[in-house]
Image (tube, rainbow, N blue to C red; front, side, top):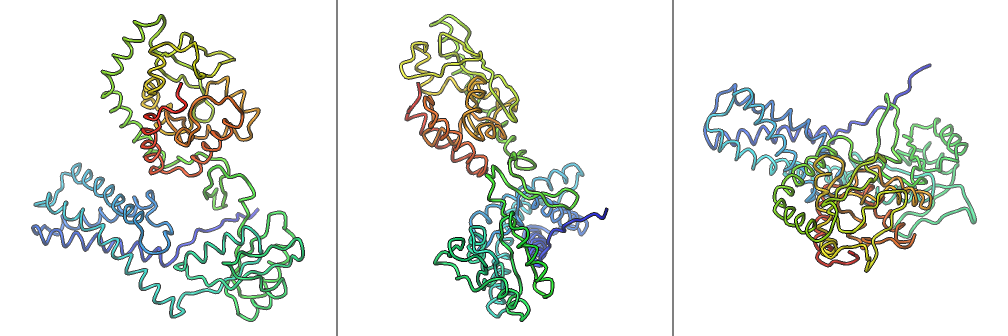
Length: 467
């Protein structure tokens, strides 16, 4: 049986960025050492070679060579600074381990650190300006047609029109459906030019350079017929699989031995993203526990003196991938329910102690979960963990409920800052909470975590739905 594999693309633009970035690092280092103090050839070669190598590797993790599109944005500039900052940190660690340093290195490193990102961004601006000029002259522009006037085709067309730097000139749509089965493209998109015979004639005459087939997966026979006919032309043909018919939780491309696969239900925090989030969780939770230790002592003493029972309450809840964890809280009730049936806290709940009402209103009762975060069982931001009894109840009532466990639970989350904090006394409230949890998993970014943490402060101060 022959092995089929699909090779990743390697565009000249991607290669140009890598070469220009290497040149930017080299030029910035030259400027830095010349402006401060000369160095030996061996030291210069060591710093330049290792700096470029580390940067190119780091860039693959930070996504520096993704398709940003359009002019250089703030996010791309920030990514350049972040990538270079990480690279220089690793480089300095190598230099320290090898006991190799540049004479007068302190000022040279500072100048190198500051000048390199500026040159990196400037070189990208130049490359894109040159490319735009060439495309205006028709150099590198390909005429593209889309077969399939449907939602997938419209998405592709919008992407093409919003990314002129891709060098694609959208000719229009082709489709053979008529009557009620046909779909009219939005006003902002080209009209349907023709059908099967028309796109075949255009391909044979050289009027189009590229065809993208956007048919649903069930239309296998139509796809095979079109591919067979286009095989008699020199037009480049692409398939755009309609993965959007599925409810994608977190989608990304991967490959197994060269065969492409796309994730449908997946944890978004594999690889470097997971390392970064875990590092942030560890540092902030450790600092939080140290700074809040006096408050913990006071709260513990008051709880112990005002009501009988333990200071802390631990409850079984589901963590990452549905694995059971024990979540820590300051005890705020006269009971410690953790069985097959757990009653949610309600407004004016007579189980809540006097001090419990205060710490629940201020969310102080949740702070011991910093221990769970430090141990890696939870995160600062993520879907709020529910009691095991509630998980078993709602997984039978809400489609995709358990998918919220594809990521670590958090002390706070998107659902909480969107207004779905507190008691979920109706199924609709829980469905909205789960919807927010799914949205968080789909859209996760470090920036989203920062925004949720800041918004949480306002939610806690507002004390809405906290009882």
